[in-house]
Structure formats: C-alpha cells, structure tokens
Amino acid sequence: MMRIRSSAIVMTLYLLFLMILIYWLVNMSLKTNSEITSTFTLFPDNLTFANYVTILTDPSWYMGYVNSLIYVVMNTVISITVALPAAYAFSRYSFMGDKHLFFWLDQPDGPTRRLRAALLSALFLGRAV
Image 1 (tube, rainbow, N blue to C red):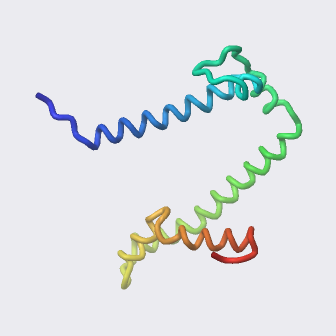
Image 2 (cartoon, rainbow, N blue to C red):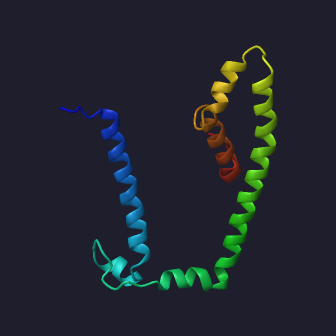
C-alpha cells in the first residue's frame, strides 16, 4: 500500500484553496452588478463580459494602467540596480557575517516587515508605530 505524505496533502489543499479564490474572482467578474449584490450563485445566471468591456474601454481607467506600468518599471529597475551588485558581492567575496547577512536579506517578510510597517505608517499616518 502506498503511503501519502502529509506534505503532499497540505500542498494539494493549499493549491485547491488558491484555485477556489481564482475561480471566485473570475466568477464575480462575469456576473452583473445586480446579480452580485442580490443572490448567491456558484455560476453566473446571466454571463456577461460588460465588466471587461468597461475596464478596457473607459478612458477614466487609463491613468490607472499608466500608473501601474510606471510603478512596475521603477520597481524592477531599482530592484535590479540594488540586487546585482549585492549578488556579485555575496558570490565573490567572503567577509565577516556574510552568511548571516545573506540569510536575513533572503527572507522576504522576515526582518523588513516591521521596518516597512513603521515607514508606511509614518508616511500615511504621520507617525510611527
């Protein structure tokens, strides 16, 4: 008898949860506004692409696309500009604490989470947490 590993079960449940969220987003986008606010259905009663037509043709949405594109390009340029020299330094040179520093820099939400929260709260609320 083949034994199923618990990590495979956890990963399957996680992927199923993500797929349900994606399905829900697509499902809601294909419903009319009145259907979304009035009844609960698993499938759209009146399948419509009007929401997509509105988003893609309404000129009031264009600046949102431009702003998103500017943000993505700036983020990419800054990330590459900072990451390439750092990656080179970590790959070529050995210095005291390099393994520990690399470990902490490699954690996407580790030590920087509190710093980001403090900076964002100072920026938007005018005070630090």
